[in-house]
Amino acid sequence: MAITYTSGEQVEVYRFSIPATILIPLIAVFLQAWVPLRFPFFSIFDLPLLVTIGFATARRSPLAGLFTGGLIGILQDALTHQPIGLYGISKTVVGFGASSLGIKLDVENAGARFLLTIVFYVLHEVVYFMIARSLVGLRMEWSWPHELLSGVANAALGVLVFMLLDRLKQRT
Amino acid sequence: MDVLGRYRNLIVLVGVLFAQLLGLAVQVKRTTDSESTRLIRVWAVGAVAPFEKTLVWAQTSSRNLWRNYFYLRGVRAENRTLKAQIEQMRLEQVRMSQDADQARRLQALLAFKEQFISQTMAAQVIGGSGSELSRSVYIDKGYKDGIKADLAVITADGIVGKVLRVYRSTSLVLLIDDQTSGVGAILDKTRLQGILRGTPSGEVVLEKVMSDETVPAGELVLTSGGDGIFPKGLLVGRVTKVTPGSELFLNIRVRPAADLSRLEEVLVVTKIDERQAEPDQTGTARAIDILAQRLPGVPPKPENAEKGATPVPGGGAPAPATAAPGTVPPKPVAPTTAGSDAKPKAAPPQASTSGAAGSPPGITAAATAVKVSPKPVKAAVAPKPQPAGEDSPH
Image (cartoon, rainbow over all chains, first blue to last red; front, side, top):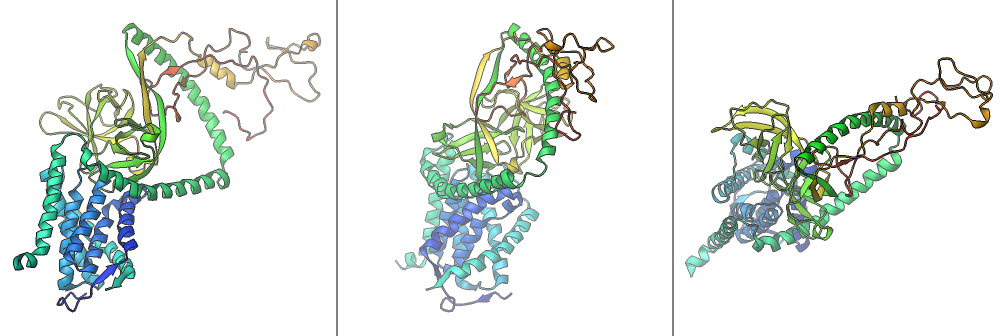
């Protein structure tokens, strides 16, 4: 479980095909909307967030990361009845952060990905909580145990999702 | 230029975040549903809904195939149980129809207008919002099916929510456990009124009930009709816990009657009628008449056997002389219901919903118009010899 610091020249940059770029986020958002209806415990996961982190760390381009995160977030927002932008802003921040970190760190191994996902899950929740509460005026309760537990659960699923994404990414 | 190039990523990030924050602020500022974001929502729903519909269709088809063709074991036993239940319910309905009739007479005296669900549309839940802060579901009916915003959505167990947004072939239903929902509710026995709201954790609470009132746990919660969306008298749920709340109000927790976490099919109330209450002129059936139908009666006396009939001791109907040797004529055990006097004045009440799915059992008498119509009853039914274990009411 080594997180190695690497220079920009050492890290490898990947890309995804256009069908994968379009379909994977769509499927993630669809599963996020559909699966909890059959299995309510699944609502603890945030599949679109995992896809955002996966794309961002593979591409290692902050601009691509923030735009991918922003679009996935807006798509997720559009399915809710809340104002559009809550998930959009949170995932923009995560996409930018994950891709920026991906340049600095080698996040190819499972341990590094696990820790990275926990960190970005909590960051995502903090940003979402602040905007939802202060700007939109939603009643929300913050619970560290719940957030950390959810972070660990998402990180465990994230390791599997990143392995699937590894099969689809192409070296530039 | 060097500075711009060096901080290009950061500048773009700030720009994108600022644009989204601005858009969010504009949406929050507008109290009405913003049309500016409708296009994005239509695209998003249009992109995701086909996946959901396909999967739900496949799931429903395979389940129907299994249920209709392969899983037929136990149908006979189930049929027998259901028939017994029907008999019990018919008796119960007689009693309830008498109560309803009395209520209608009183309502007529007071020139009371009653609401009832006259049309519903069955819809299938195809997906959710994917967010715990947006407790809502998508159904497979939209404006092309006649769905409009603010229609009530119910199940046979109780109310579910209201239609919030309508698209071409799908609609977004806001559930009653969402924190932005509000339903006018009334407690069944104490008749205390309040507002039903969801909490961030997904619980449902009844607000605005004064703390000096006594609310027992287990009491039923019904819709009050005050919100203009749900007709009065629909089942909402049951009180689970009552604690002193903040300020002057009680904190009443309610468990919804409908299982909101496992919704599959719902009914959209597309038409609610309002009419003056009228006392029922047709009368009601008597419980004894219903019971009489369950008991074996005397077979009709054959005309050509008048002379050869053997009188039965005890004043019962004569046994037919043509009875085969070795057979025992049935013994009358119940008063015969032959003749016009013995006919029940009315059949068990039937819900008068004309919708596709009818009125669910969760709806109380106040919300459904219970019409009683005459039903002919067989004069005297000869008991059929039934083998043990045959489908017969107990």
